[in-house]
Image (cartoon, rainbow, N blue to C red; front, side, top):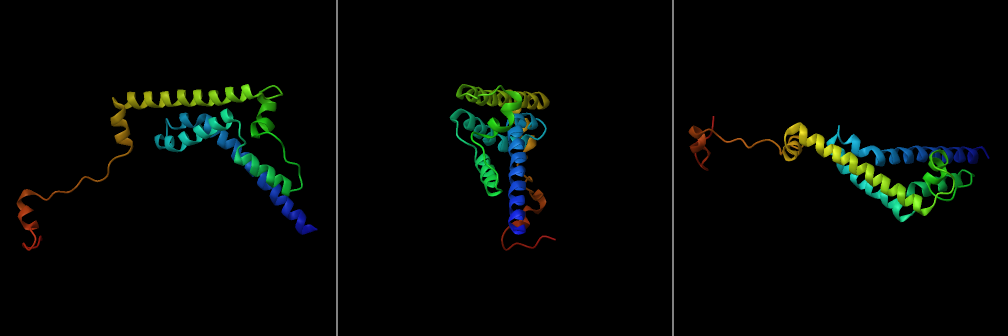
Amino acid sequence: MLWLAGDQMWYRAGADAIVIVHLLFICFVVAGAFLSWRWPRLVWVHLPAVIYGALVELAGFTCPLTLLENELRRRAGEVGYGGGFIDRYLIKVIYPPGLTHGMQIGLGLLVLLVAMLGYWGFLRRRKNASGGLLRSWRRQCPPGPAPVHPSPSRRHRLVPGGPPIR
């Protein structure tokens, strides 16, 4: 019986860890565009996350993290919950009871609006800092080392079968 209680404890701890990961993911979806002002390459991670976050709200499907949390809670001997993460944890604090589909669409549009504002600021800061957006991107992602060309006086030695270079 002690063994079973230990397993249940780990499942409960796993479910609680998923809640934290879920909350961090939501914070990243909302604020990731602003983080890209400091770390520009983060854009490539944030764009798929914000598209996914908006789709969850706009299409109304359940996030896999919610499903995983519910399964872990069930294995821990607890009852899972209906609805999604936002319904369970955030709506009670931020929004009035009774999340409607219209409110979910509004949340999805809000996520997209915040991301657009963040990326507008990102592009504006990059353009102002460098005098041009393209120059800024090139500075962030340099092409690699420049090729080394031998001096004109040594070029004749690079001919196959020629004398070795010393």
